[in-house]
Length: 346
Ligand code: ADP
Ligand code: MG
Image (cartoon, rainbow, N blue to C red; front, side, top):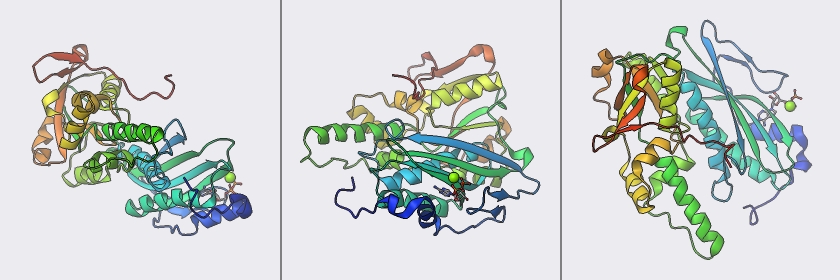
């Protein structure tokens, strides 16, 4: 990947030199970041707010494939998927820590690319980089990010608050990231068989972007605050809609009924799924990595969201005995099953 580029060995800089080099550009933006990089621990002051913390671990070969994921995108996405968890609590994300394990095959320039992506995400979403850890790894690249945020106690939204009669809503559209990944995988196979062939990604820009450059839905958290809608439950769509619906249902002790014809699917996702012989509905239900927000609201709040093009009401909450089902376009009931992404599956 870096054959033609400049290669500076990380060993030349040493651990402390590397940390300084990578983090020098980052400026602290939040008053709540009392101490960032440079001491044994970061210090926060969130006054009377509740503090939200979430961590993700990303391993090369398990969570990402460097043959088609540019390193800058990887850094950007690693931050976004973390922020998404804070937004899913109806909170604001304010800080991250970044820990990396880097094998000797990576030159300094590669790690710089990752940090460019991290910086881009931090600037765009107003986040302070306040610490992390740095180590050599025997094999492959490891990135772990912890995100920190806050919310007023009464605003924090859990998975367990859905009640019978509530409306089930989702932001944006679904299935795009999964179908984008199928295109990238297809082009990778073609490339492996014949490296002379250039990847054909024409007309697939939206779904490729959904896969490589997802965005946490901070705008939805802002919007809900603005229109004074407190969701009764919320979760982000990382493993797939069906899997997330089951989390809300299990934790809230309720059933869910969704309608196939209400699922928001972008035309490019739909067409491409068809082209690949995939069912667009299955992609929306089980694809994952959309990083949209799935949430429930009181029926009384329907008027406040009904005109928002970025929020779809896809169903409602029922009693626990009714289970979790989808009404198909031909009016048949299907039980929802979690085929969520599972790294332990062979
Ligand atoms: P310690 O020996 O206490 O683990 P380090 O020397 O690893 O401290 O880190 C020094 C400072 O640099 C700390 O504030 C730490 O949080 C920060 N830091 C270390 N690695 C990274 C990184 N990859 N990205 C951002 N900050 C980092
Ligand atoms: Mg350390």
